[in-house]
Image 1 (cartoon, rainbow, N blue to C red):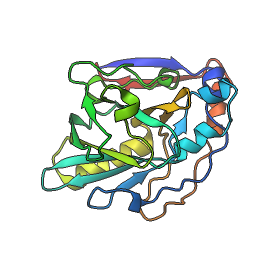
Image 2 (image 1 turned 45 degrees about the vertical axis):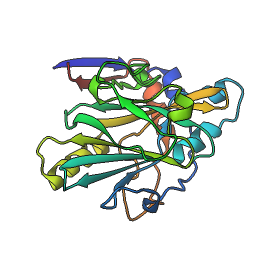
Image 3 (image 1 turned 30 degrees about the horizontal axis):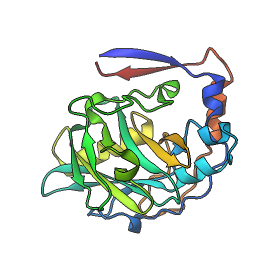
Length: 248
């Protein structure tokens, strides 16, 4: 085990969009059973569209329409992570996990039944880039064996508007309730973070992350959304440090 100290700079914090539209996602958008616990409102951390002179809200709006549903297949003893895209633009091309507690293992493609969704895992370190673009500024370090990428050409085989992809993992205990609760608690506390690299937003790509205390409620798809603008405070002092445990 090692510790990585990452300084959050003002420029990195300013890359986070200050206003987030309300998510249109609901549990009924997902296909996994039993009904998943929903993670929504992925936050844009790169803001390349605005930097290129485009709309300041487009990237944020796309983030509200990217969803993750987490469920447990009791028949196969697998944690299921279903990613869906109901945005009007953008293709999820890479998926990353920063798993501080080593709760996940043996990543596999569980369901890519949409005809134009084809992904592979990172068993041969083939996922490129190896970490979520822009993620290092927020202390995000992808676990190498927990990454997945669309087959080439990525814009064709990624998760586009109206499409979904389900990944599976083995948990630590093999007990449904325990493994699922451990994962949800880790997401809530920021010990497990998920990063999405979204391409083909016109000529741009953007990176998205879930942040601690994001809405996680399968029964209330319009739960209060934390303001990402509070992250700006993290960058106001250049000496502010975050210490995050990393697996070797």
